Length: 218
Figure 1 (cartoon, rainbow, N blue to C red):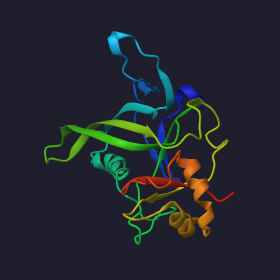
Figure 2: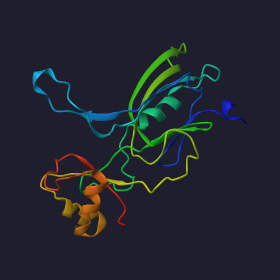
Figure 3: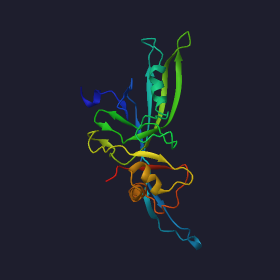
Figure 4: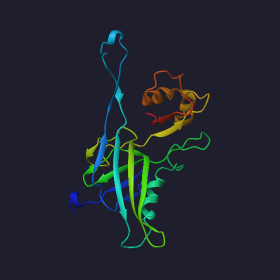
């Protein structure tokens, strides 16, 4: 089967394949850089400073139709909605620290592979029903937000260069980086590794509720 004839699908972090009944008509990709500036008196145009890359966004609309079988289309759409749910079986999940997240996904279509992304939103519309009220046709608008910088966008081998996924920790009130490092890395001095992975300049200014990526200890 050629790439042009391939059916698109979503591959989850748990290695589940969610097929698309029909390939999308278009893909919308948003990539951006962040720039900042200081106000200048007198209406002078300020010089911009580069402040890092922004989160990549991929938007697509998927069409589902089961009128030929009479099977409820929710058999397929419910899997998309399920990608918004927290999965406590993922690495780094802990009920003790209230730390959990939904799983990430990768969109594949022939030679086209997206970055690792989380499902930011699902806009679901049911457009046709059987005489008994069973939904048979649906349109789902997906917004995928880049999860981490591990994969360039475009044609590539989807398994090349993929590191072990980071664990994630939700900062609790009163927690410090060294304490978090001791819990996840078994070494309080590993706080520098966590700080570097999250771009933290002031280790004393942790914000409760924020999420930290916990990399593997070198």
